[in-house]
Length: 81
Image (cartoon, rainbow, N blue to C red; front, side, top):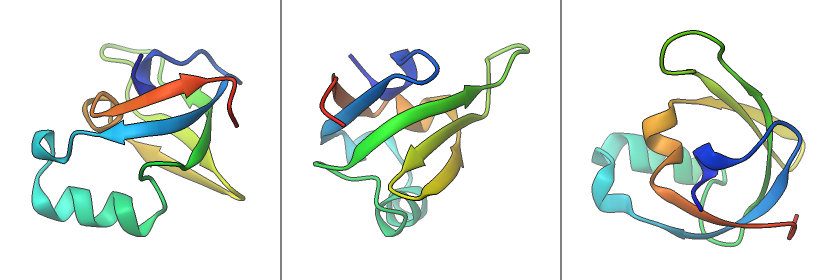
């Protein structure tokens, strides 16, 4: 399961990230925001139109907006946050 598969309010832990799916500058920004292996996350919101972008993901005390394509690069295990 990937981060973009979570339902609103569902909590999970990032188990792996396929950094090769992301541009180097995007990967650097996401790592700086704490979105890496072991991070506890929860989906706060998903857009309602078209591709349902952006996603709002809670990481610690922060809420981070991200594109669905970035969330697809992150494998998660549900119920671990």
